[in-house]
Amino acid sequence: MASEGMKSLITNFKSDITDFDLAKEYRYTGYPLGCHIGMKSSGNQSIGLSSPVGALIEKGLPFSTGISYWGSNICRAGWVAESEHDLPEDAQDYVSNFAGPYFYACTKWLENLKIGTKGGVLRQLIDEHLPFEDFGVFLNPGHLIHYEEWLSSPIYPNSEEEIHSGMYMQVDIIPRSKKYSTSRMEDGVVIADSHLRNKVKEEYPEVYERCMKRRSFMIDVLGINLPEEVLPLSNIPSLVPPFFLNHKKVLSLKP
Picture (cartoon, rainbow, N blue to C red):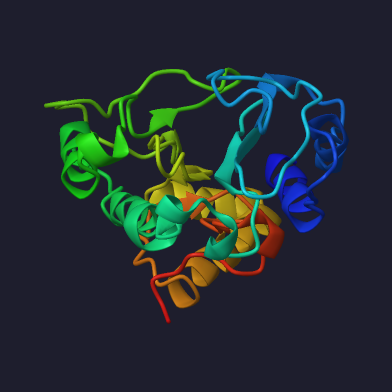
């Protein structure tokens, strides 16, 4: 539901409307939320976790949003723009200097999300690919999720906790910059060994098939070498449009 809501919002994204009107594109189903719907536009950029406030969606400004039903959370962030030419002059290299490196770091995180990998390794990977002085990643880069959106995290400096089968992880890596604002590729994935994968395939064949199609998309179209134990649950897996007014243009490791 969360990824379908985000897909609807991105597909129907418009400027010069209020964030209240844009939030309707989430098509909220009434299912319980894991946290409130977030949306930052022209009127609340300085508020960390803000709901819509009635502000105008203005071209040329940063934008971020997220929706979380029980057991899921999807977030995306970028600019209200058709291309880099709509951005402030000093931020027009947003893709090459910020969103692109961020996307690459997230793909490396996913490629190392293997059973037995220590959380400290994943934390160090992000610190190396996204230097704090440029990207400001402060919170744990990735965490567990359940009914609550943020449960706990095995990923922190020098963590000896290992990734294991059955973990439900959020690709929640939050960069920040005064010049470039932010970017986001937050989706949910399940870590499943061969036993769990076979069990899902047997008991929930349609779910398994959707996971396999998402994996194929991430590997074949986006160029992410996804480990076999990673089952993506989002219907827009790792799809990141840096410019919301041009949503069909997304980041990819493939040309």
